[in-house]
Length: 444
Image 1 (cartoon, rainbow, N blue to C red):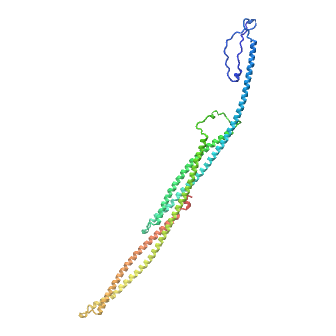
Image 2 (image 1 turned 90 degrees about the vertical axis):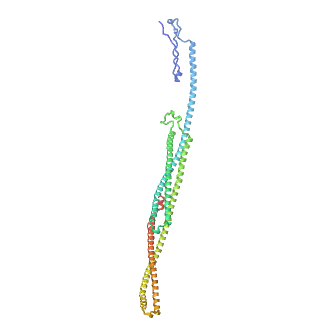
Image 3 (image 1 turned 30 degrees about the vertical axis):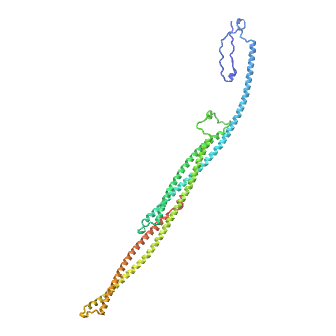
């Protein structure tokens, strides 16, 4: 009968297990038969340790246990110091990060407020410019009425008759008014284009500020939410890649400069808007004043022209009355001359008959005696008188014809002046009463 072969137990490393190191398989050793005790195992060595091995083994165990205990205590002290320092550093860093977030929130709030203020200013400026644009358009439309009045006045005055169709001061003032209205219309159109362009630039600047404000609004909300996180917050998560450097990340200087540049651009547009508003107000005021001044000049020229026409017509009417009076007197004079000529026919016949009968005297009786000389003188006198009367009658008739011509001419000129006065006063000046008011010309 033989007993089983006894082998040593495998080595087990507890520290490796505690440290999570996978235990290595022990090296394979050949099984060597150990001697056993008893008569049945005679001739074999016993498997028991010797006392020296026993003492050596437990002293080694004690020494290893002491070493492990010392290392454990050292690691515990180091671990306590490490997690205390780490806890303190973590709390300090977290507090510093929270403080930085607070400072950042104040800075974002400051720039966001500046952006909001300039956005509101641009909105107000744009609204004001839109109001000015409406005024410019109304003022431009209002100039059509003066232009129509001036051109109608020129067309009406072109229908004046005869010598009244003259290039006078009224026509000069009307031509000046037409040129002034055209230049004002061109100026108002250019100013309106400037206002439209400025409104567009204000819109672009406002859009830039709104985008910047929107980004800062989101950033403020993110930083505000981040600042509210604490170690007790239940909604925190692990984001291992969040600390990695992102592409196209701006620095603080570039971030500040970006907003400052946007605000600077907005400030430039606000200043440009302010200057343009002053310009538009001045343009509207100047154009209104110029139109009203020119309108007064035209009206004054019309008034003077009407006074001249009235005075000329009055003088012509007085002259016509005188001519008519002279025509009547001349007609009566002609009648008198004709009657005088007729009255001389009988004395002429008597004197000629006497001379004829006395010419029939015979012989020596045909004598140039006193009666003969008297009769011849009488005939000559009557002939001379008739010749003078006929000459005077011819001159009277010629004068009457001239008076009739003058009468016709004066009457035509009176009609011409009356027609011109009707055009100037009843047509043109009445039409000019429709001239727009100051408020209408100013675009209100």
